[in-house]
Image (cartoon, rainbow over all chains, first blue to last red):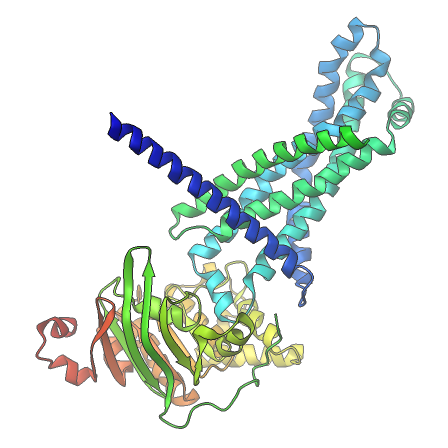
Length: 263
Length: 257
């Protein structure tokens, strides 16, 4: 009995040690980004390539999900608003929900699945096949070439994708409204634009930069620190998605609290 | 990262003086002591073959030599400088003079052969024009007999071709030392022989000093000036192929059967 309790204690202590160790490593990894990002040489070509891969190649996925988000949100909200005779509020409600919360979080989660796992798997396989070591022994800084460019690209591209998803979601909302009724696009957009203020857009956009940074950082950290063996590539990709998704929710919760305090 | 040019070389050691000198090198991973006091010398222009059972620390030794793995204790003098005491910028100046051929060539999967070769050169010889860069790539590919593969992707190459391209990527910076990590592993007998001949040709043509880690005895016989055998983290014995083949030690002879 005593032995079991001791074993449990040891396993908890070992788990806590590993967790704190991981937190320390992630912090050092992220700190290195800020040290390296401003130092020349700048890997502009790789940065542009990553922006294309992360931003442009995610457009079809973001378009479909953005449109469905707007459409479904409208269809689901209509009956409730109709009960209170507030159907005319539908465009404003859809637009505000999309811009303030739904589009940033859903787009970030989709990108965590597509981008973070992709980066984790790519860098993980480069680590396993010694490509990262090959850069290091050629006196090339692999962190700068592989990590800095990817984190910068996600930090810049995720906010742009979210803004794009906002727009597509609003169009989806228009489609949803016109399934049951007939509202002109002009009237719909006028009502949407009337209801949105700078304070709706600004905090929601700021948090997407943090989403982007952490999606890139977590993907890079998991891949860059993958263990040897092909199995670790899958683990790096999987772990990147799970950690990035969880981090998005935590950032969102903090962002909402801060927004409540200051705006 | 500081820019380094391929001409940024300090005078190297005198003829036949050691270009690599490892003194009392220790390295452990947790409780697993891999290197327990390695002492090794590689003279200028010499091909040193390192033999040993799997897990005896051969690859770890050469990874310590280029600073990929930190050491616990000991000195690694390369061109007369103890690399264990250097910061990253200074270490990079030494690294650029050392070529490293990885076991699986470690070609960059997302780049074509041309890009693989140009990637390193572009970053270290920034004054090269596009034409000069292309000429150097073609020249080095010709030297490994694979000029037709210039536009291929690594996934389109066979094992032997990957090794040759890996070697070309190493040679393009004109290294004075080349470290080969199992250059013929996984290759058929004929391709293994071709790679061994290429290693000898590079030694003669470029006057390089090399450490060749291998389990392939024909390759060891063909390429070695001297052989050392690692056992339990230390150098067990050293000598020429012919000397070791006739060793009194049965364990040593077992490598040559």
